[in-house]
Length: 198
Image (cartoon, rainbow, N blue to C red; front, top):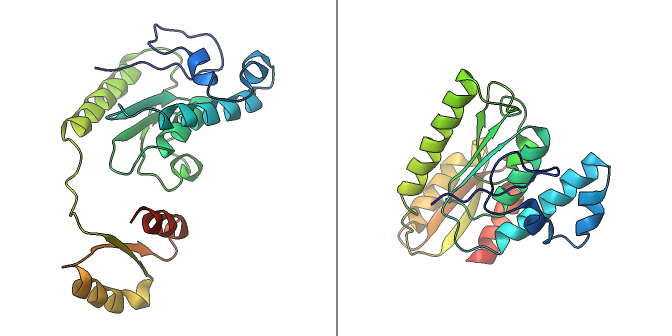
């Protein structure tokens, strides 16, 4: 059952299940940023509040976000706090550019909205329909089956590929070998979090 969450910094433009005030309550300075006039500060604070809200929920099977610049920033902050493997799809006016700041090291799928999201038209209706079916399909697949083995992180960089491949093959019967590219965006962060979680 979908739950519509308002993460906007202005009044909602549709019916919602969870109002923005409930999301904002997860930030220490609720009234300050919802009542203030600085849009950038409000967007940043709402992103932090949404991430905190998401981290308190254990009932999220998938997340679909829709937004322009501010909405994309806010929603992806929440998505970044979800575990790897849980479906995360962001429909955004910014999805065809550099999305590094929004995806960070999370497994967020970015989908270009093609048109602005200020109202429905033939193009936005088709894109949003596809996004809805896409996230429902991903959620319907259920969580991935784990190996049950402890994870071990290995870093690989071009010329070390033969060595890391050989080491991985020697360890695979006892460990879930997770190989990261040394110049990848999340190499250090992923290794740290993987080691901490093992």
